[in-house]
Image (cartoon, rainbow, N blue to C red; front, side, top):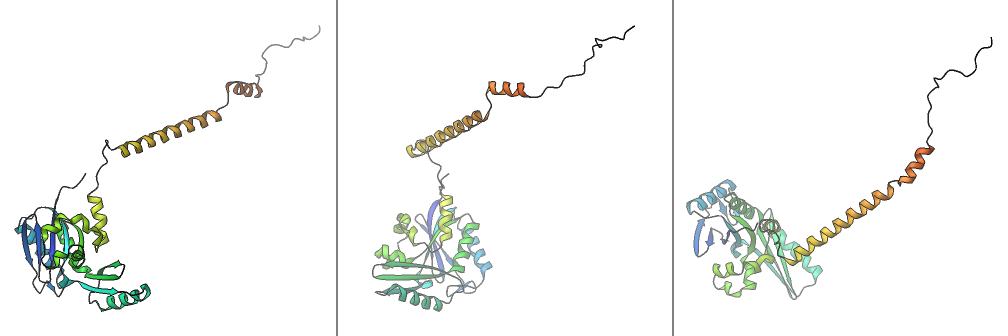
Length: 253
């Protein structure tokens, strides 16, 4: 069954998050003892923060796309460089990222390569907190990559424009786990009016009938014919019971 939850956006900045649901927006502040410089200081407090935020603002169950601000993203651009050297430069760049665990995505264009890195722990705590309140994360993307697709975002963050074009941003997802989850949640049962579905069922039924026919023929070919069975019965040894009649010869007088 297809899920009917409304789409929403959670824009994560260094000190706050802004949730856009329809034409409404709700702001959640991140105290320094919870998040500092993009690092999670207290996981439990952050989870509780989201629980209270969703409850107090009466946020309905929604599908949420997380968008990460350039403030909490590390970015590296490489231009006109052989692939072998790119790998070396990427490794050097990743070694400089201060996060213990990371989400990373590399985008390659003909003359430019862009590497984006996010704090994996921060993303996981937020997505787990949303799931606990029946808000399903559908992806995590960096605003940097969306600006390549929609240059107008460089001047102003436009949540309504992003909401209209959500399907075009799936290839920018930083977290592959959420891609799998979304496919499971959005599974749609094939319609019986779908010609391809009907054709598939017809082929399956035909193959099943052929299989049953072959099994029946095989069983019949292994069964002995009636005449053969009778001959086998005649050739089988018979046992006779001892005669109970008196002997024909008598004693002479």
